[in-house]
Image (cartoon, rainbow, N blue to C red; front, side, top):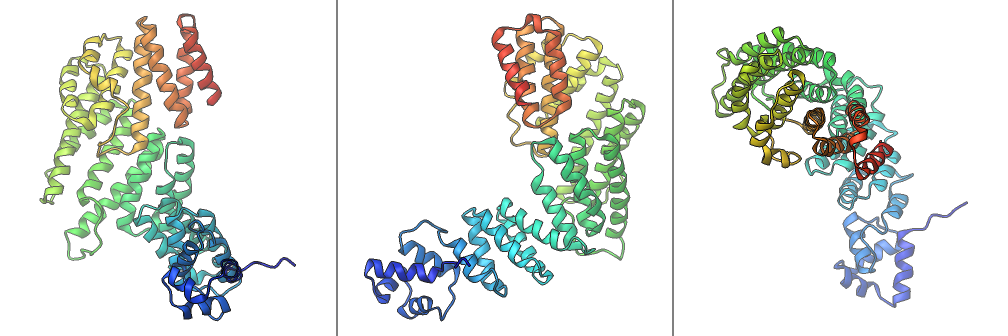
Length: 447
């Protein structure tokens, strides 16, 4: 039978090796002799703060004894959350994620500890320690998977939010895993959760899913709006003004019709989006959002007409996007779609936005779009720009933008965009330099 070493034995050996008395070591650690004596004799367990002091005094790296701490004081011991909580926070601080996993695995057989672990996970999330929080949320979700609890739904929501990243396939799987739990959330939390889900599905171009979620959002938001201005008003407040959720649901549905080429329906909703006379909120934030929705509505009216073939509105659309940083990237993407669809010469427009295009990768500071949709807009714009130049015989520029698009598409695992890049490249292979062919081959192998 393997005997597990103890921190106490390690400390005792160190004191003998260094010839230190308990009093001398106590002075080094800043702890009194009695505490050191109790730890050495085993009459007293130690706190994580005391362990850190002892570790430092012994000249060892931070967290050196954490695995032994788990063995000596957590595994096969009745869980003491007063000891475990500060230990988990300290592990998170030192990014000792395996230690956190061991603790969670050791105590989560008992559902009694779920509430406290959930509370700690929320604390870590608030500190921005996402990887550590994710482990705790996963532990609580696994322990409560057969419970029909709001806490389980919140865990799944947190996991969904933490796991969303650049990889579109992983984002899709995260969305599918979370979606069944949305309706278990509190009604106010559901509003933001539905928007987060819709944004992921938008970036994945899953338009029917976006439409269904938008309908759910509209129904829920209207119900909450009625409650807000009745005698049944609750204390819980959403992240944004309540009218936002109704208006945003309309925009989502209009966006779906637009992407599906149903321009008459999209135009109808765009006009409706500009009519916000029904909004009751009058505070500064509400007025800001109201102004934004009206701007977006006007831009969408112009854009929908443009996509339907009314190219006379192009100058107006350029004016709308040129004064709004939020709309510049998607706006340029839309202009290139129109240029390629209707065989327009937009060289003068590209010259007008030459600086913006050269810095197109820098999308920091945008407020109204999530990263997934920004990535989708970026690869969309680059692929349309590449297509434009290649079609017009400007192969050097076209291939440069194509390879840039393919590089980003590979990083975010956007297979649809990668395939488009491959088709364009093969169409123009005879005009491509050997250097570009090597880069292309490397990108294909990466994908």
